[in-house]
Image (cartoon, rainbow, N blue to C red; front, side):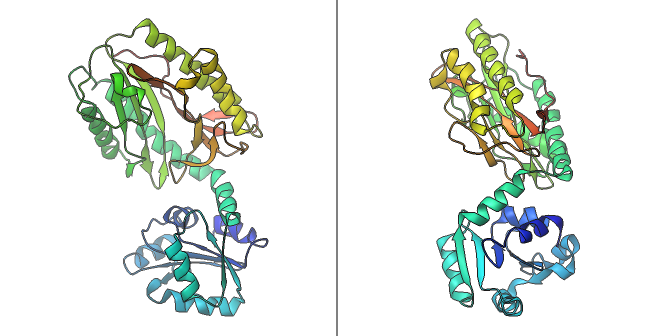
Length: 356
């Protein structure tokens, strides 16, 4: 077992004799091996990864042959392990497993009781949320690719191009310069479309005076980056400048609030109060941020509904925004590593208003 599966194994005492991990993201987190098929079985004494013949050779090279089993006879093999280790209860990911999968496990492995509660999910979320140094470095590499793409796109954007043109150029640049994939579908929206926080790039042409919101990230060795910048084309009105300034103030306030032990509610409030005081509280509907790692949205959520507390090692975003329907929107987003005394900003792109 590696350090991550060891930690999970040591946390099982209070909930079950073993854990069966089915979800792709959690399998990758614990094994470091990406596969669309497989089971990860973690007991008190070992961890075994079951996958089909498409992946077994590659998995053995990545994880070690002693930890990999062919899944052609997965249930027969698991029955033998349950018997040898006297495993009577098995925890599963209640937030990831489908009802069909759960029923299939119960039918195929009646020798054990499968437990679907939030206990395993809570353990995994807490573990994944605290990044080790190797994870930080992978996220930094992903972010460096995204930042290079931002520098490139500033020289590409001009009136007459469509939002899709900008989206595709960002995507192409990242994939050509080291990204193994995109963190999510790139958002590149302009003018009135920028008032939609998760607007979809269209054939709308970019015009002088538009704000363009760029929200995107790179995937590198299984880890994501996430950043947002809003830039102006040609010129910006006084209203645009004022709202941009308010969002920037709120974004910095959240970063200044980020610290080990601070509640996510309070970190969100630091940004939200500034936007509300400026008269745009109703124009900021989403949370201030979220965790980032092997998935683009991870625990903890930095929002007014969150009950979580920030911990050293969390990597979370600060991304408040103001969105005025029919006019424009502004969002600014950085990723930050939470430390005992504050946070380390992992995003190095300028945040002052850029007019192209």
